[in-house]
Length: 348
Image 1 (cartoon, one colour):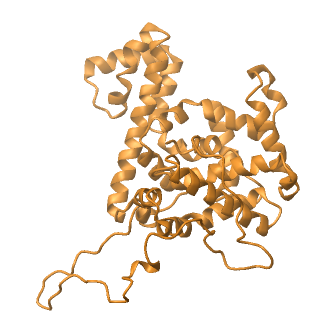
Image 2 (cartoon, helix red, strand yellow; image 1 turned 45 degrees about the vertical axis):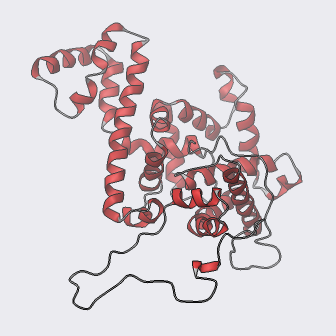
Image 3 (cartoon, one colour; image 1 turned 120 degrees about the vertical axis):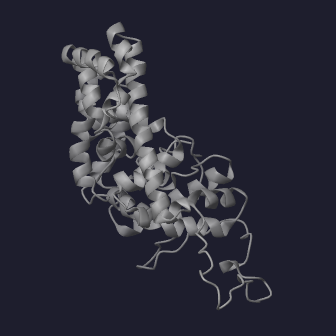
């Protein structure tokens, strides 16, 4: 399942989280009975069993890590509503903040947030939905659900700029490259980022790697902040993020190789050496030949220069392609992302 939620189910209804006056956010109501008592305590009210501990022990008992998002998704799929409630608590604030960029008021944003979570619940119970990349899936669903509202009476509850974006985005999938100038800059940037080599490389990664890169690179959260989502501690999250960044570089190289194999033979001969070259491990004779090729080939020279920069380009390209819409109110660093994203997507 990709982070962009392409296999999401189309059902689900709007929640009542913001009806009437301003009320504290609550988990949207669900159908079905929770699989266990609230809080996970025994039905008879007894104290849960604890680890044995002795005063003369040298080390404290190991701290149990909270369940990862993937664990919670698996529990949701088996009917555990308490897992759904925990995912809501983890991600609702970010989803609500992004929904607010599409909606005229906070009450409508709350309704949109509730519907997005309800659709995710239905998708997961139906066997699809996200596995690791829950945040990106939910944010993409915000755009998709809000876009569906533009075809109903709820269009009046959306900001005008988003309504225009949604209409042009839908039409943009049917226009040729020669006609894209008729589209808004935000829609053009989204389509360009979607087709970029960096985005192809990102989507080729395992979903868990996509998810950790989304949180650490796009949302600029620290490893300690996102560790809970992966069922790891901060150090484990740093290792996971480092592996994901290296995997992205290799995937980017592979995308470049795939392109060059169908093009120039000289490029194809040197393309698979770029990764070793970027790490400074290419043998002297081979490096001499590659350097000569790079002097003559602008395409491979650009790829070589972007290998080390591709991870840094994630915040510019990925959110533009995955989410697509950034309103005036902004989501996280939306203003900077859309400004840098359009240029980065075009360059890619």
